[in-house]
Image (tube, rainbow, N blue to C red; front, side, top):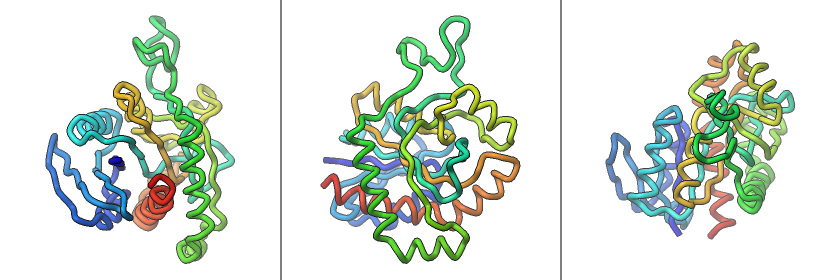
Length: 248
């Protein structure tokens, strides 16, 4: 089995790529793909760049050129739900494109010609990633201590809906508007639902796991940059370590 791993920022992917053994480097479509072994699992990993189009083209290339069997998209997101704090983890169940709106031709959020307003992750895949995150939070005590020293105490995990769009949600007004239109959404990011559409087209299972870097308000840009630089890579690598032990 070949596992594809994607992230939209280099800071989310650098530690994963560094941990891959016996790396084969392939350049294609302005991306650099790293194929090798991660914790004994055959993987191909790539930094996709930000946004739905960049993520979709990268996912398509990964599926067609590398013939991956399943995909994980990892990285950060902004909290929409008041239940979430910086450092918490969200596993995507339904993935919406919150900037898709072809009204009056079809209902809001519907992906044209699909009849779908979201892409749903099979419960078994959600459960597997949830177990991986649980194991990470339980076992990685040294990292938990580092987080506590930075004021991130007892991070929690939630499974639920994620909204993707080519907008950085960075004001209370934007956040409240998104929550009003999609009240089930826990967090927002810029790639997951686009990758989900590609994976659905090609029949490749996808799991999206996001770490909350900010609360999608006027301070989001400051919080997100600081969190990404300090913690995003460690979160992603540690969660993938536990996930791989479960799927191997």
